[in-house]
Length: 199
Image (tube, rainbow, N blue to C red; front, side, top):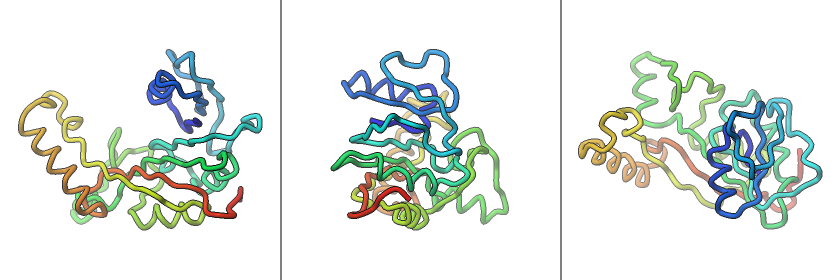
């Protein structure tokens, strides 16, 4: 597996513990980075680093594409890195979420430390925008799972409270029924289109 923008290696560690051979790419190695994960230090805004000709069964882009100056440049390189039958898994924030829309409607564009208004986001796509971006870069989406707003993270002191659990259940159920309006993130599985290669 190739984990792009792996940060301190939280996800990579879990994958390695489950028996996957994981290569992570991150700009700077964080303290406590998992020893079982191969790290390649690189700035993804400058393109993919040399990975020694290795091809991967799975490439993971977890909360990274919206932070890149030109996500299409990185995505366009990925089909050539996938082994036959390989897939891309990406988690993508939904700027069409009702919370996002209501803020814009009210004339607000907050700058938060995380979430849909993360101050480090450079791009704000709704569902159609993500579909178009992936298609232009040689991918077809095979599966999408929608996540709901993680209410417990917004109210950490009440994470186990019954009202928080009810709100989270409503958010997740709504996201499954109407993903364009209620999904917090889209988690997509995509494969290269037939005949697609590195752009």
